Amino acid sequence: MKRMRFIVAALVVWLFLFYNIERLSEPINLSSVGYTFVPLMAVLTLLVPRLRKVPLAMLLVVPIPIFLMFKAWVGRPIWGTAIPLTVTEICVIALTTILARWTSNGLSEFESAIAHITIGQVGKLPEPFSTGQGEMYREVRRARHHQRPLALMAIGVEEETIQVALDRMVQEVQQAMMKQYVLSDVARTLCDELEDYNIIAQRNNNFLALLPEVTSDKVTELIERLRRAVSEQVGVTLRIGTASFPEDAVTFESLVEKAVGEMDAEPKPGPSPQPQRSTVEPHAIASEQG
Image (cartoon, rainbow, N blue to C red):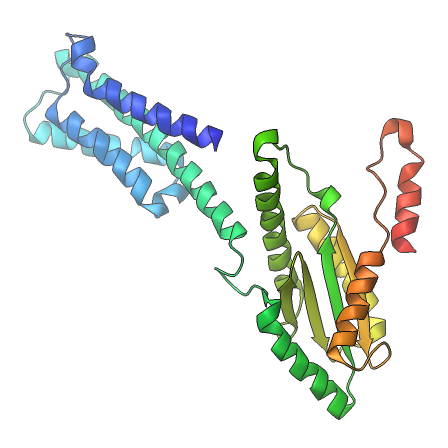
């Protein structure tokens, strides 16, 4: 946000200087086309999302001939003694476009962050547990009635692996936002990795994933795949507990209790290996594999 404030402030200051440039330097006498073209480029760059995908070099070059055509059309000189003024106007347009592009990119990043933080706004994301548990109940009853296998996973994130520099005055707020941001990324990864017919629900700060027709021997391979995917795409470590029907429990509440208890009891990974503590890493790996 500090970077975003700086960019917006720079754009505002630049536009203020631009509209007062003739007062600051009497020899400069910008044309009416220039005064119109500069804010037009700024507005288009900010309001047209597709322009964010256009290379900056193209965004700087393409408007120049259009500007020169309009300037010639209104009868203002371009060549000869007017070349210094024309070059100045082109530089002003280019600088305004660059600042507007930076502002647009900052807004895009902010919008993306809000989309991540607000789980459930875009795409297939987990439902709240209060909504998803009804469908989970039905799947457990179906498995019990037809004597079919079923697995339930409780999935959480090791908070120690969420790396963020926090300001002391807003530590709690930032930590909550960062945790929600990470959870949203984990949720998207789970939805991408699991099948469409699997049921995923967010329960407090963890997730429950109900896996119809999945036997206990297939869960281990799935767990490793989820750990690897989340580690690569999000950069955090998962804690996962499992419960299988009918081996571990035959009711939904018992399956949840077993999976969550196993998740909470899973040993935490050791600290990141450092040169003076090279013996810690093998122990941490052994703890995870055990």
